[in-house]
Structures are given as structure tokens and as C-alpha cells.
Image (cartoon, rainbow, N blue to C red; front, side, top):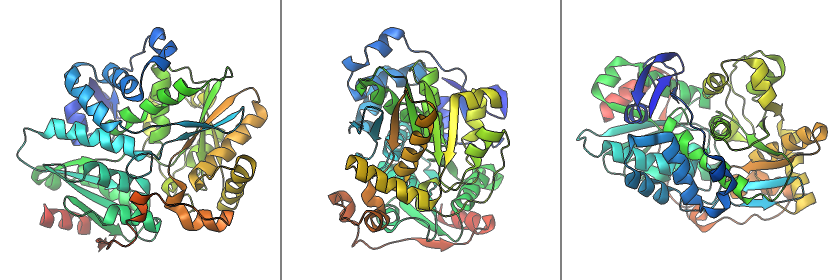
Amino acid sequence: MQLYSTKQQQQFVDLKEAVLRGLPPDNGLYMPEFIPRLSTNFITNLSNYSFPELSFEVAQALIGDSIPSFELKTIVHEAINFPAPVVKLSDQFGILELFHGPSLAFKDFGARFMARLMSYFNRDNDQELVILVATSGDTGGAVAAGFYDTPGIQVVILYPSGKVSPLQEKQLTTLGKNITALEVQGTFDDCQALVKQAFLDQDLIKNIRLSSANSINIARLIPQSFYYFEAYKQLETKLPVVFTVPSGNFGNLTAGLIAQKMGLPIHHFVAATNANDVVPVYLNTGDYLPKPSVRTISNAMDVGNPSNFARMQDLYGSTWNIIKDEISGFSYNDTQTKEGLKEVYDRFNYIIDPHGAVGFLAAKAYLEHNPNTFHVILETAHPSKFIQDVENILKIKVDIPQRLAELADKKKEATLVDTSFSTFKDWLISNY
């Protein structure tokens, strides 16, 4: 597998360099030299494969001979060891539940795969690998769980102070060992900017082996494509299938686009955002205008300048007319999100989280003008991770899974830092 930067398509690196480096030196994003197309026979017979088995087939097609087949199979089967069921709400709506992993969020798929992939590539190196990750909510907890106690790897998680839910914060601040949390006095965009700048700083690069676990790392996108195939496998509808994706940094949707280009017959994508509507505005007008993120109750999507937009453009040659034909965009404020959450519960007796509620509203909006379609809405996190909002909105008691409930009494351990890069750089140098 050879990869290039979205800013420099003439120079290639192998998978090991792309994964361990995380970000190209030119501040682009790594993309595969080409996206292979899976056989029609494989797509037609998806039901014959277990989730880990089909995931291995997809991974092997993408990765090729970069990793021996038996090693890759072990990585995939260890990482993808929990289900991704589609819950049918009606003849036109289904919910793809992506919260059955250790941290109760879809990021578990990417984090667990990435941790094992990095561990494989890092096994012959004596110098520690330091993983930097910015989180707006779920990424931090998934990465913390995925990389916890992995030999030779240290993880530094940057999260915006006061802008993640209490249980989300406990997931990334209570593990200890090789997991360190930095509480940044700013927004997610500030956290992401610090991580990106670190990869461009020559002093840091010379002295510390840095990599990233955000969706800027190609190792996150590869496994996120797996569950699109798994979802499609479970569908019984004959209607054209639309995937509606609650979106923040747009890694999840980009993974779906890759699955589509590999041959999965996805009719259309719907990008669903909260008030941070940069991409829906672009899809509707052709103008991409990044702006500071604003806080919402669907906090994992509070991103004002989505990194993976560069990959979306790369997939379509930066052609707005083509992109808007493939993807529709809708955005909703908190008031609308609350109403969407209520509607799902009242109509289908299903408890959805705020991010999924945004997805439901977008799917419903697309369905109004495209009635003969079936919508798979990605439910990216368990509603109990946002228990205060969900219980206040629905006026019901939400059960908390044991692995999340047991975090409530654990002590938070985090270092408070400002948004200046010099502060962050000094901290890294003094600690690693």
C-alpha cells in the first residue's frame, strides 16, 4: 500500500510511515494511491461472512502486501470483536448501533485497530512512540481504551475544558499508566491546531517520535469503512440505501465514501451536522468557509474546520458539482436536536443520543424529497454518555452500562494548559 499527501500527489510513502508519522510534513493528509474495487461476488455474498471476516477482506484489499496476511487477520479479529447491529425502526429508517465497544462509541473500531497496527509497526523500535490526539468527546475515550497499557506507546489526549460530558471526561482522565490527559482552556479546534502544529515543529520531530490517533491518521479510516459493509449485509430492503452520518471532523463519512468507491452500492450520503455547519453550507453553496466552532449538546461534532474535508475533496478532485451530487448536507441547532430526540422516542420507542438525533432529522429531511429510499442512521455513541441531556429532554431514566457507570467515582487526573503552542511544546519536551 502506497500513500500520498493531499497536498503533494507525486511523492509516496508506505503504510508504516503513514501510520507512524500520522501527518505528512506538508500538513496534508495521507490518502491511498488507489482505492481497490472489491468483486461483485464478494458484495453479493456479504451475508456469508462474519463481521471480522468481511473486515479482513476489506482491510486486505486496501492494505495489500504491507502486512503479512496472517498478521493482518490477527489484528482485525482482535480489534473487531464486538457487533455493529442495525436496528430497524420502520420500513425506511434503520439505526446502525456503533456503541457496543469498550468506550461505547464508534471510535472504538478505529482506535482498537490503530493500536494493534501501530504496535505491530513499532515492535522493533526501542524509542517510545508518543501518540497525540485531540478530542471533542468520544475520540479520547476510545483511544485511551484502545491504547491502554500498550508497550512502547505513550498517549497524550488534548480536550477542551468544560466542553465534554462528565462521563466522557472520566473516560479519558482516569486510566493512568501510559494515558495522559491535557485539559485545554479553549475549543476542540484549538486542541486540533496544537496537535497539527506539533507535527510540523522540527525540534519536536527530531527529539520525540510523534504520531496521531485522530482521524487525520489513515489507520483510523480503514477500520471505519468496515461497518458500512457490515450494515449493508444486514439490510433486507430493496430500496436504494442512503447512509446518514452525524459529522464533526468528517472521518466517519470519508470512510463511507471509501467503502462506496470499493464497490459497496451506497445510493447516497447525508452529512448531518449541528450548528457547526461549514460542510453543509459548502454542499449547498460551493463556498467552504471555516469558522470557530460553537458549543452544542452534540459536542463530538463541535468542529469548525473539519480536517477530513481535504480527503473528501481529494476523492472527488475538488469538484463541487460532483461532491454535492454524492452528498447532501443538513444542519440543526440544539432546539431542533432536542425535538428530534423526542420524536425518535415517541415514534419508535428508541432512545437515541443527541448526535444520532441530528442524523435522524437530516435523514427525515432528505426523505421528504427522495421518498423511495432506505436510511441507515449512524448512532455514534450510547445515549448514557450524554445522560443529563437525554434524561432532561425525554423525562425518563436512562440505564448506564456497567463499564461506564464504574467511572463515576474514579478520580480525574488532567493537566490544565492554555492554547499557546509554546506551552504545549515545553510540556512535551519536559515529559518525553
